[in-house]
Length: 321
Length: 96
Image (cartoon, rainbow over all chains, first blue to last red):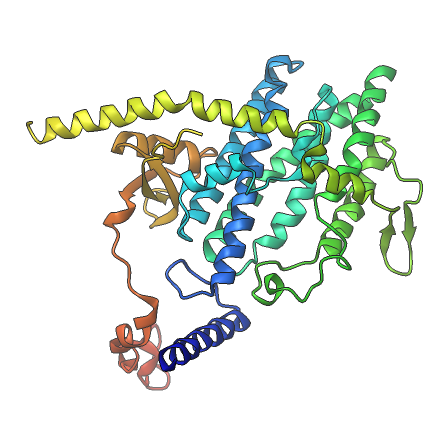
């Protein structure tokens, strides 16, 4: 009993010291003491973020062989390679919290770990590649810019690196949309159709309204999250509407209206039933995305075995065995 | 899922231009030195961010313990005479 009380006291003391550091604005580094809740929250969020980058390669990968020009193909390849790289930065950063890469992949495959809902939608036409870069990466950037100030050092550093690279992604997407809007009637129609399909899912990327996910959570207190879902969503809408206007695209929201007093756009209701249905596995591509990841992971097994065999052979040689 | 090894981790240090310090960039997984260097290049220098890379097996790094910071860094705390601002210079002296 006495020992238990003592342990509780030590835990309390650790939490207090941790929160003092957080309040002071210090970054938390891998070897610092941190509450279990902080570690768990970060592992969940960072692995989900890493998985999103990797699963996000699939809708675009589908278009590499069908890109309309060599220039477009080179750009798309480079962008998808970046997404893979971003996944790696984030897996590395998450590993500093004590979870292995194998465990994270196993959690993805078992469904315990999630990835961003947006990648459960299909990329039907070339205009979708434009919409993904412009809207999906655009929304991701708004979130990631805010996360550059997250309290966990390795996560924050990965975000800084990722933000530097993402702006190319968004600009290449906007360029595709802009080119199509200068094209034939059919091409303009394709661009608007992609806009119509990607706009609402992009807004959903920021997660439920603040009224549904209160500020008071540990994620805010511990400065893992620095801006609320609605704040970030608003920021995205405010900067994207003008970009759509410049190239002649219509935002598919009849309630969208500039609110002079607030200095923000007012938007119509988001279909949260769709959001929860896609999270629950009811999206058009959930099964396909996961089946593909598992298949490729298993098919790559021989590469890992070969590398391991080669390493062992070289080690033996070194030891003159 | 086949559970298999993702290999050891290596810490990546990068020099952004000749003469600059090597700065920690992140880590990669690799089965040997050559793969570690190639993975580090592909992961951390896709836009010419580096002119030179070091990779070090993560378990070869020895790090100080943040809990011991007070004691560990104590020897530097009470020696202000190591700083140039400690000294009083005579009025009018230039370029010192």
